[in-house]
Length: 279
View 1 (cartoon, helix red, strand yellow):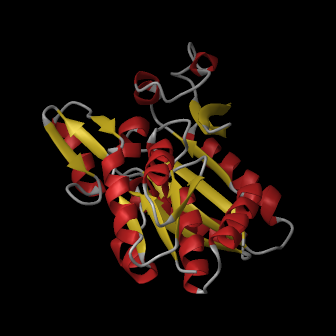
View 2: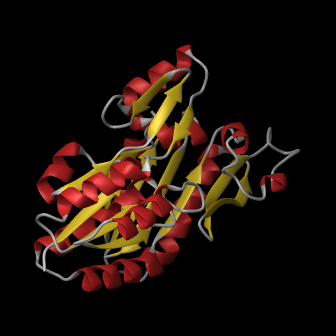
View 3: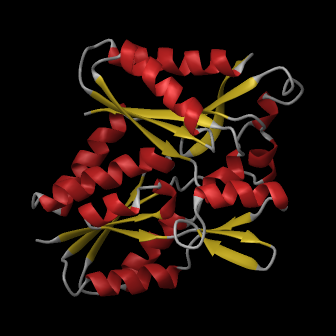
């Protein structure tokens, strides 16, 4: 059985890695006025953060179902199954689009997987799926491994300004922070597929330390972990944090990724996050 792997652009997996692992990508879009730009194709993260400084914040748009149908039909010529990994269904209809398209296409079994997260945390699942597919694992075996990963997957992020998330309706229980926004750095995470406040922390430094401590609670076991630091146009800060964490947690393999245009629209520039799971 040959299994293909699909993900959407919010996994922010580099083109080189997608090509190397044969991961197919469906883009989401950011819309500036009349102009719709597909992230990772028409607009890079770097371009996006520059563009936002000069214009109003865009809106975002999930891929049309037809795009999924077209890709799945194309894949059905060479594959028996497809694992389609997407950003949390609690913040986007993209996953549901893959599910609906899967039911409309004959000749291929579509396994849509809800990462219940986004960015490179979602990317971890797609990369693992692609590596297993290359080893000849069945779709069922791959999905079982992704579900296993989900048990140890953690993700936390810090935003400079909650207003983007609130305006886009992407933050649940936002009232928990109202009235104290000026004094705190909100630490957020996903709960039941939605973004919710985790803790109120006074400064960004304390928030980063808190996330590092949460990683430490898992890494103390000495088992091998994989972690990613994710930044919204703060590469230098991300690299500094990575160096400090590598010295502290030798059993954790760290990488750096970014919040691209779609997720960056909702989190805002300056956001930082970290996700990890047991290898």
